[in-house]
Image 1 (cartoon, rainbow, N blue to C red):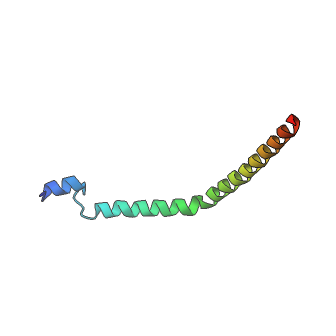
Image 2 (image 1 turned 60 degrees about the horizontal axis):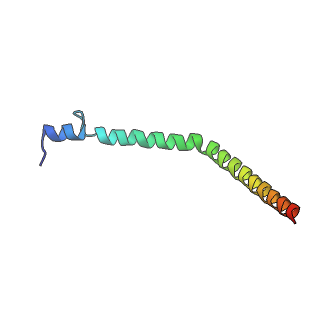
Image 3 (image 1 turned 30 degrees about the horizontal axis):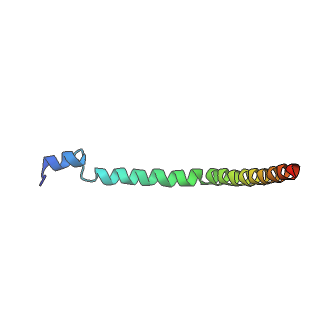
Length: 72
């Protein structure tokens, strides 16, 4: 078993027993902020992709029908 100073060095607590929890709290704040700030932008990008994707699919179906009609 690791104990004492070796355990603190292994956990990288840097002398503060709450260091790891503080890091996780900062990660939580960063993740929450990024969700709040970037969610609208992300939704707009997904909408643009789906509109463009449906347009591309319709264009390829139309092109396939046109080429089939020409070969008959």
